[in-house]
Image (cartoon, rainbow, N blue to C red):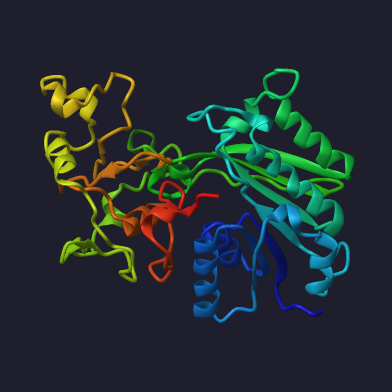
Length: 344
């Protein structure tokens, strides 16, 4: 098949955040493989809206034969320009139990190797939490899982490069660190781009950095969100700008200054602080307008800088860089709002 753009296939597509960036870089996404039904609905809506020919494949990736996929896409081995994806991160996250390959989700990391071995793309791109670098394997040795992954890439003749990247360094209003691995056939001439942004105190003229983007630059302009109507919660507003903050949480966050968190308010009674300790720096956190957001993680909810309520799903999406036209399909609780991907 003849293509006017460079071709790519997306694995673990989630709600399509990585795919948006790949398209913006000039690639045609031939297929998106995702297991979660609500994420697949979101991907299909984006495909229809953008009028693309991307195939959305709703399936367990372990049950897909990459050679059959290659035939369906009318690709020959070695023709695909890019194979990319971000497997589930829960088993490697430093914020979780760090079960690594003892968690079935951790084993999904190696599905990229299986697909790469069959398709032989020109480039492989992996996105993952930096905890993968230190994850232990069967020998209980730090870094063992990552070494195994890199070793498998090298055995199928790919040369990998990797770096932990801070999103705020590239104009994203979030202090989010992620590991990126770029592997090419043979010699790898890829060079990771230099940062474009820095904290204000580093923008002193010696280096041509732009200051970090603050949360206020992406949170403003949405107006008042929907909330409770006739005793039920509205989840189907097309732009996901919905407020579901419980009254008691409004009371708690009302006591927190901008840029601080509830555990730091030691003058408050135990009924408000709910047994929080000094380590709970990201629970009941109120964002600061002039600073990037903390990393948005599963199980945590951040608060508006000046209003006593949660951030809405649309505002989480803005912090991640999703365009305003991108719509999440399905109930709010079906999505991990920390990374706007389905909870698989």
